[in-house]
Image (cartoon, rainbow, N blue to C red):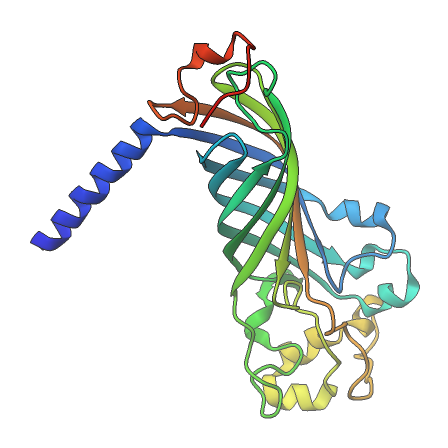
Length: 291
């Protein structure tokens, strides 16, 4: 226990020193989220129907006028529904899903023009961003008035002999994108950002490969898996449509993505670091800062 207390004291002193001696930016981004996957409509106007609210609190550590290290937590929601599209082939498939996503990420921003809130000539800059993150998702659907967790069902035979394990709900992503930021004052920044997430799973929507034979899925994973694995007959109120094994359900060659876009506001906490020197020294516009 003593060693744990010592470690906590050291960490606390280090964090306090960083907060005092460096420039920290703390902020909040809010906007919309969407996804790209097997249930995305072919028409972009229809895809916009599935936009949802997203929010991201973030913390940035200013390395210099060009680079910021950042950490963030993102909540967003994604969804898709074949029944809402106009394409008849996709509409007949009749699959749907919804999923909340919780993401923690770290990354690096590159301010293309340099960004110094206290310098009148560098108070606005576009920036690029890349990072690494981890997230939790859980695709669900509504069936007979109940919310069903699709991963546990095994709609494509997951968990059955010869079909592999069920996919993990914890995944890695690579966030990247860009935005624009502007200094309203020495302390307040505003801007907007678009962030794409490269994922390494094709199951954000629980759809990836081929249909499993109805009776094989019924015997292997049960009646719920058989009912949700192929919902084509459900749309028209008929019995389950028996498709040949291997019929295309999704496209396993392309992984799923999710995207967020939002506006943001942040506050600068500036200490004694040489990153920004003395604030007033940049208001005279006599030259560029030195580092």
